[in-house]
Each structure stands twice: as structure tokens, then as C-alpha cells.
Image (cartoon, rainbow, N blue to C red; front, side, top):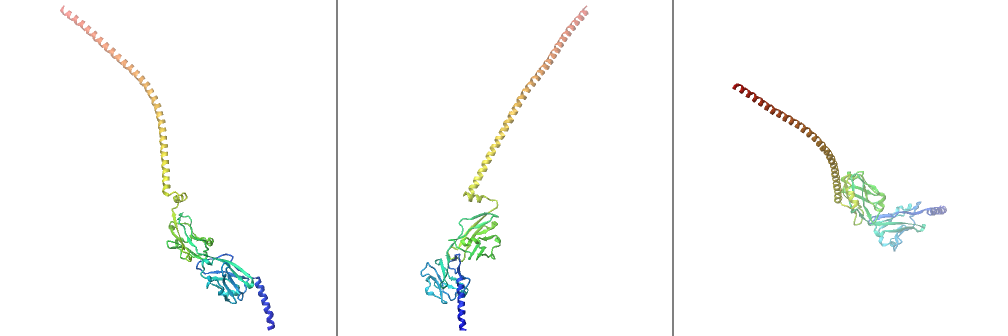
Length: 367
């Protein structure tokens, strides 16, 4: 049995060496981001997996002195070599070393933990690095109100400054104390959402890695107006909340948009509009009066011409009538005069004859 054990060990050793030679030490190519006070894992493993339980595992930060963050050797942790700032804040996953998992966990990270870390397996000549970013950002809302019209979509701006990845954190939006939208670990949690906002809210998940936690609100109603709060509860910074005011204008109202785009107040715009209307009214009245005057003048000229012709005709008619009347009057006067003369003559003759007759009668009587 002892004679057969030697060759078997050699074969196993050869197989292990071949496997380790083919394995690659892989750490995350993407930076690992965390907030101050969080626990974070720096993922690193062998692919294909092989056991490293009997290997030395070294985690270091080359920019520090001493550079050792965590050293595992001969089945135990060498705490004497560790940088004091990481004292009792690091560990490996001992149960997973057999499967090639050499990830390191750091507890309660600090902003000073930000940097590039290296994982090494000296006996296997494997090495890889990973970047850790620890943020202490403030939540920034908007100083200016967001104004939209009923039925439009609105984006309520809110972000972290300096920018920080918040996809793994909880982001809460509230309106007058009621939940509008809750995002946690890249998913929506809308169980406690106010019914007024059902199916009308969303966040920009692809932008969260850059600290953008803005809220999109669709089909805005007048009930949506008011103050909104964006909150990142686990943030260790002094400013964990941002505030945004939303103003909703009635449909068809353009005064607010014009005043915002031009910088002119609503009162000034109203005054200008009234002034323009007044000028238009004055011009319209002046034009109307001018047209009436022209029409009156033309009518007067036509009437004057007709009256002149009528006067001439009347004068001629009057002259003719007067002539006829005079002729008739003269004729009547002549007839009357002639009748009078004849009457007088007749009377004279009658009186003379009668006298003569009377005289002759008297003479006869005397005789």
C-alpha cells in the first residue's frame, strides 16, 4: 500500500498543478461602491475553481504603509501584519476557500478606505486588483419649482453630490408624507404607494450608478402639486434628503410657460396684452369713423346735386305757373272791367232814355 501511495500522490500533485496553472484569478472589473458605514465585499475567485485552503492569500493596498490588509497563511489569519486602520474589520470566507473563493469582506467602511486593492496567491503566482469607492454624498434636490401643465409628464430632479452609485441602496420619494415611489436594490417596492400615484411613477435605474435618483411622474393632475422629498435613508452624510416643489397649471394656460421662458412676470405680460388690445380697439374705432365720414360726404354731395337740379326745375315750373296765373288773372280782370263798363253804359243810357220819356210825358200833360 505504501508503495502505491507514492505514485498516487504524485499523480494528484500533477493534476493539482495542472489545474492551478489553468485557473485564473478574477476580481470584479467594475468599481465597488459603498456608503460610509456600510459593510462591503470585494469579490475575487479562481476560475475554474480550485481549493486554496492550504495556500497563502494576501490582500494589500500598495498606497498604504504597511500595505497588508488581510493575510491568510497556514490556515490562520496573520493579524500582526495588518494595517492598524483595518483592525478587526476584515475577514475571508473560510468555508469557501475550497471552491476558490478568496473574496474579502470589510466591515463599516470609511471614506479613507477608498482605493485600489490587490488580491494575490503567491505560491500560485496569481494576482488581480479591484477598486473600492466609499462615498459620503449629499442628496441635492431643486431650488427652483418644477412647473408643468395638467396631463403632461414631469421629472422631479434629485441627485447625489458628489456622484455615487445608489442602485444597491433604498431610495424613497414622498409627497406630503405619503409614499410616491420606493426603490430598493434596483427594484420597485410599491406596496405602500399612495393610490393617487399608481402606475404613474418611475426612476432612472440606468442613471443610478451616477447618483441620479430623479423621479418621473406621468399624466400629471392638479392633485400632484405640492412638495416632494427624495431620501436615501442609509446615507451617512449630513444631508440625506432633497426637496422639490411641483406646480401644476390648468390645461391651456400658457402664461406661466411664457413668463418662465422670457423672464417677464405674469403681471407684466397681462399689462402688455391689455395695451395691445386697447391699441387695436382705438385703431378700429378710428378706421370706422373715417369710413363713416367718407360715406357721409359722398351722400351729401349727391344730395346737393339733386337739390340743385330740383331747384332749377322748380323755378322753371314756378315761372310757368306764375305766367299762366297772371294771364288768367289779367283775363278775368279785363272781363270784369268790361262788364262794369258795359253795366255803367247801360245804366247811363237807361237813365237818359227814361228822362227823355218822362219829359215828353210831362209836356203832353201840360198841353
